[in-house]
Image 1: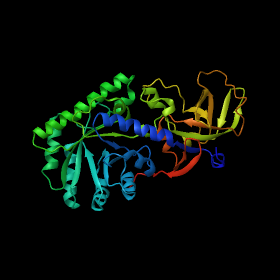
Image 2 (image 1 turned 90 degrees about the horizontal axis):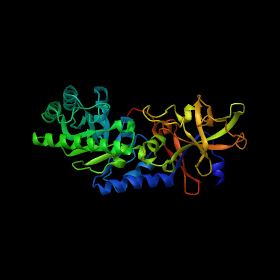
Image 3 (image 1 turned 180 degrees about the vertical axis):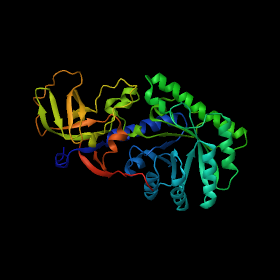
Image 4 (image 1 turned 120 degrees about the vertical axis):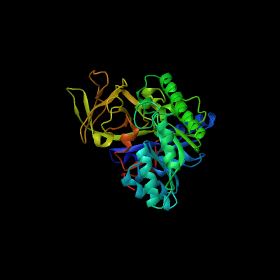
Length: 382
């Protein structure tokens, strides 16, 4: 490794560019076989260099989870943006301002009263808000009942007003993170696809346009085998992957592109503990979905040079700036060769949460050399 890597301070967020590109290509190729384009979600990466890789060969649009993301990526040259969090009155002026600047921003909502609010605000703000109706395809979170009268009512409110226009339907199979097998995920992907496609047919038969039929989560996008009637797929964590994705069976551990570089700062030899300078401020406190039998603590410990796991070592506890490494099986860890000053990598449980603790990525090439520093945007506001 070059001296630049040896001099890198810890904790630092590392991004393996080879694994990143491999992950992006894998999902791109899978969706090409299903004849459906990808609208990458930027909430995991929050980085223009990563997202440019993800949208290469795609129509060019992205999915954002905050208006801050939408504004930041628009300023970096991406104009087709879906803001995929239910809209509220306070955010409509900022959304209107983005549209007025040339951003092709689409909003989502899931209630007639919200549809009226958006339509009225569009008139007041002299803008026509494109709106997707969110569907609840798995009982996990927000959304209208698929194929329902309320769905048609919302479509009518949006279409009957000059302040809004119907852009389509959207759903997210968030329950995929709680599945116990790839087969369960694939069944949920079929349910997700059917809910969106059938709802689009219902709207069209009622006389409403429905150009966008949007589905997606990384697990369902990765294993789905039918995207009939779907016009786009949204996914984000697939670019990096993490230990949750590996536990679900949608990637292997060596597909995880993200890690945290840390330094050994001490030991508790009588307990078999190794102390490092990566606590929850560097790793997050995310342990993954409670439904998963995920015995990975707060991350898997890897060799600093090549990123391969070191025995059965995991991070078993975190304080603000301290991490405690021990053996996964509770056995006394052999820490004799892992001296103070040794550098290690920690693979994340949840890439979104771990990346969110950092301002930038230190980017590695195939030889493990630092070849760049890529900035991450942070914050919620436009």
